[in-house]
Length: 385
Image 1 (spheres, helix red, strand yellow):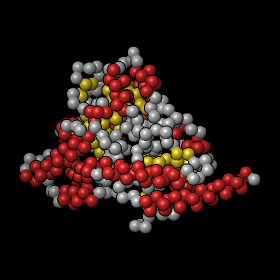
Image 2 (tube, rainbow, N blue to C red):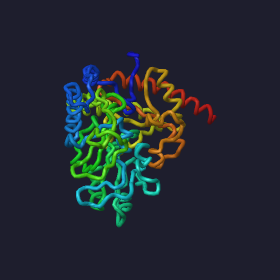
Image 3 (cartoon, rainbow, N blue to C red):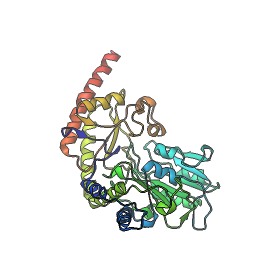
Image 4 (cartoon, one colour):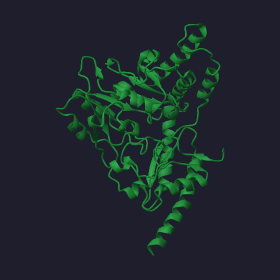
């Protein structure tokens, strides 16, 4: 499939060479990382090396990194009542932004009666005044705000939100899964008390993630109970192969993040300039700060399912939004929260790039879009004649 163009990096990334080499080496390890013999200690060494790499990438302490089966489990583990920091009061409710990933909107271990939703602006950015209103003179809350939206790429004012949340006696969970590896990320600078990551968004394998805790956080109860793995915070024999590859991918992602980001900005500008040549083209969240690799767009009358199939037939992989729900033909909850009509929302197509995307890939995508949009506009004129 080497002649295809892959523009669905937000769904999952290709495996980095560094991660592939880590997998090959870790596959030869016979030991269980909980065993005390030499083989077990060797497996443990690979896990702790990866833990240090992930922690270093976000400015955290290695002991506060909890490996999980992926981002969804990490979110579910972190969204829990009774969390507290230091001598502060335990959180009793959950406040989430309307554009969170579905694994966050599900609420983790909070009941639906304990969950409230923060509005977003038409640009897809959290409404800080509404957040302040929901937290004022109320029991302490855990707020969950993603660093960058997986559909629009809109970067959220997380540091400003953290100040509001902490002033109200609450805690902040940050889903940084989509932002990790694309923009610089420092947990302390963000003010995050909990932060979630996923390996397959940065060139690691699928099925590995992490929940990272700030210093002094307590009250976290494990989702999976059994053995004492992950300092008794997540039971189950560790996925040594996946964790080793996660660490290798994290190190590689940090090495070229600045240069890669500048290159992606140029590609994004090239792409969006071409898309805007189509009459009435809409690029969502274009007035907000966005990830340099993400473009969500549509034109009135477009059906995303038709467009995704059309791109695929042209040899180009794109998405109709979040990969976790793209198989369902329904409007995006993100665009609905931004105030877009369902007829517009159901036509949204996401193009997302990565480290191997080239100018020629963008040109080929735009040529395919010109053919698709030409046929679409022709059908619209026929239907309105």
